[in-house]
Amino acid sequence: MSRNIAASEQWKDALQDNYGTPGILLTKGKGAFVWDVDGKKYLDFLGGIATNILGHAHPAIASAVSEQITRLGHVSNLYMHPQAIELAQKLQDLVGEPSARTFFCNSGAEANEAAIKLSRLTGRKRIVSTEGSFHGRTVGSLSITGQASKRAAFYPLLSKVKFAPYGDLKSLRKLVNRKTAMVIVEAIQGENGVVVPPDGYLAGVREICDATGALFVIDAVQTGMGRTGEWFGYEHEGVKPDVITLAKGLGGGLPLGAMISLGSKVPTFKPGEHGSTFGGNPIACAAANAAIDFIVENDVLEHVQWAGKYLKDSLETIPGVESIRGSGLLLGVVLKSSQAVELSKICMHKGLLVNAPNKNVIRLAPPLNVTKKQLKTFIEVFAECIKELPHA
Ligand SMILES: Cc1ncc(COP(=O)(O)O)c(C=O)c1O
Image (cartoon, rainbow, N blue to C red; front, side, top):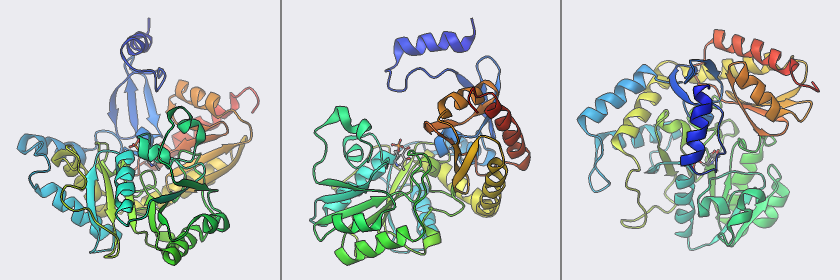
């Protein structure tokens, strides 16, 4: 019996079924590649779902983490440590706001929970989010997630949350008023199938928030840390939000999230109002600092823009592909047929890791430092995979 199959049996007998039983047991990774327990090699174009921004076992991250764990692994939030200060200062520089204040946590859901609590400090309670959005699975972040199927089994959730169609400023304007504490949007809806809003959308949200005094929160959990070829995915619109939430790529593969408030008008937490035992742990912060340094020193964002365009232009010509949407290295391959789930399985069989966020879209989120050779291999094998679809 394959060791992948044996592991599946053990997984089923010991873990909750919330992820189902994935088909392969991964045991090793290097750069853009991973290997399963039977020794099969895969080109990983999902990157832990937009998380391993520099691929697997990147030397800069591996050495920062190894160094840090031998020096100081964990201190709680009763004490300061240099790695958190360094990272918060780096984030200030990247957002271009000396007024930026960071709260560190461990995940995207926690970053959004922090944003929800922060917005309550305005004295307002109402939240407006968008249909199709994904903001996490905890009760607060699920309450502002615009996917009814994910919320269905878990009512009652937070009340006073409304959803506007994504990209539709007219509807948003009707829902946001002087009682609205925050409006939360993604610059691109990743989990919803890499959905890109019309040009001017984020600027329009900014205007609506300015007119009503609602906080403008950008959930950059998936689009952040260079994924779109910009640091946080909103910069091309020339706007700045009041709050940014981050996770995924922030820790370069280690669990780390952040909620950043910008500007002196945005409330900030006072002692005792929020916290997290592991949030901003020295090891996770050391990994994040190493990842940011590598990206800056090696002009990785320029590479992301080039690589994203190359991938988009090449994939568009493959028969069976309707269009490519997204930005930088967060791309959705829209298929002509609704066979994305089948295609993702064929891809895995042929040694490519991708995922199907819905029935006609394949999501790609390779490492930001993916090479031209890896892109070429992906395009070639992906085209072969599409040919194998029964109704291509
Ligand atoms: C935009 C966005 N926000 C929040 C989350 C939740 O992040 P986490 O799974 O780290 O809680 C995700 C996860 O996919 C996401 O894509």
